[in-house]
Length: 143
Ligand code: CMP
Image 1 (cartoon, rainbow, N blue to C red):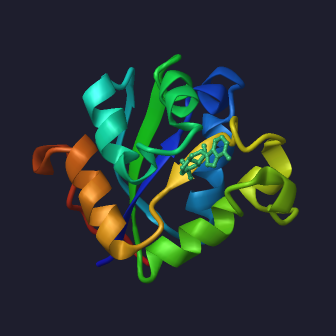
Image 2: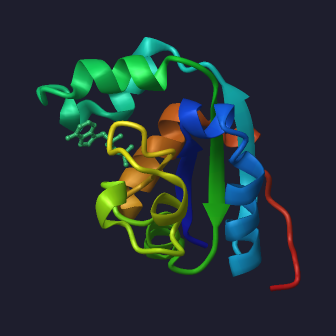
Image 3: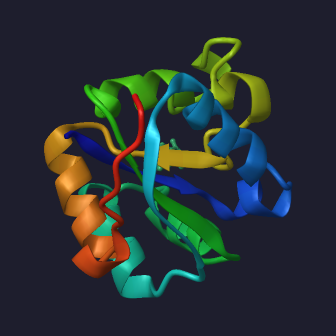
């Protein structure tokens, strides 16, 4: 089954949005197979965002992601990567559709509440950065 990596960023955790965000994925019918609250070390932030290392916003992005705990999750389901991206909404909250997480809950691209993998390859890579196999639970559920 397909899996994707989702992370509520420090602004989302501090604003108390974790429950709302988890509810949206649960209501869609996706299955949570891993979750943890963590202060991310610099190496993992750099690894996750390695494609942005040379971007002018990278130092601010790294500081923001390390400013408080993130809530990291792995979600499972058929076509979970594009489904989660649709629920999350466009990277820039100004362009995110109403009803999406960023469309409803965020204003600023630099404080956009949540990250979700943009492809199955990114999902595999990002899950591997943040979770060990033992942290992912294999269980059945009526789908
Ligand atoms: P995310 O989906 O986590 O992927 C890359 C992140 O970089 C993005 O969300 C934003 O948090 C951040 N980002 C992308 N573009 C900009 C920008 N122009 N200014 C500040 N942050 C940005």
